[in-house]
Length: 321
Image (cartoon, rainbow, N blue to C red; front, top):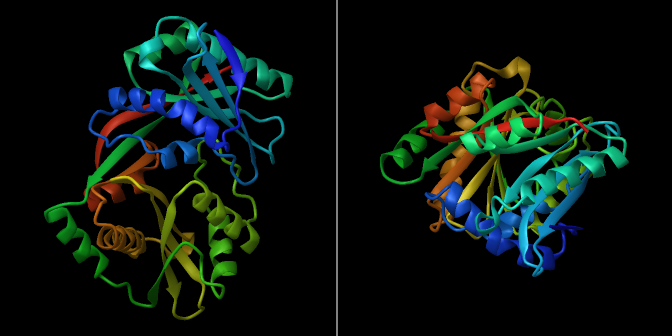
């Protein structure tokens, strides 16, 4: 196998890898709509505050056999590379996975980083592959889906209509209103859930908010946000985000409520509201997916309350470099 480094932000990379990625996801997640170019672009693009490694394996005829993408937090120069490794179905059991894992570990070692953290569907094949390479499982996420049809829509509308006293909802699509962007950034600072391959939150500013909005737009995604603003202070006290693309399936983003404002129903109100809005504005939308760490019991419970159902689990494996 020939391993090549690719630019994850280049349209040519998306066009090259999209057929194999579509074949892979149709096998791993047969109930999902076909993978769109926008989804793959979002997965491979470089994120704010993070570097990105994209390596692809090619067979003797120059056909892509699989790829690995890793995010490197620039604020943690000795830290891990975290991402996903995919071997396309037509090329499995030919050594592509081993070659990609070895190449990724070598690249991290060259940069003085480690370990290599790889997310994969929790299957016997993934467990066997990880064990054969001395990898240990260090976390598991649930993949949840919400079908935006029938009684679910009515239930969401009911939850979105249960206002919380002392707060008002502000909605936007795309850019955060200028009068709220600083407050929104301050709320974002408190996010404590790590995200695969992205930089740690740190102390984001309005400039960081604008950069993140631009990232989504460049990958063909439309961010929807519902924010709870306190009547007494005018501050953003919580928000829920969702990303819509040219596909029947959308992705949830973050749901956050400031520590001192929790246990009042704000999280349910916010997430129900943003789901109702995207369903109303996008007739093509049929599904919403969300990934949650199994240890994040409040968010797991929130998703159940809103009608999400887990259909698979994905584990993170750690390989020393």
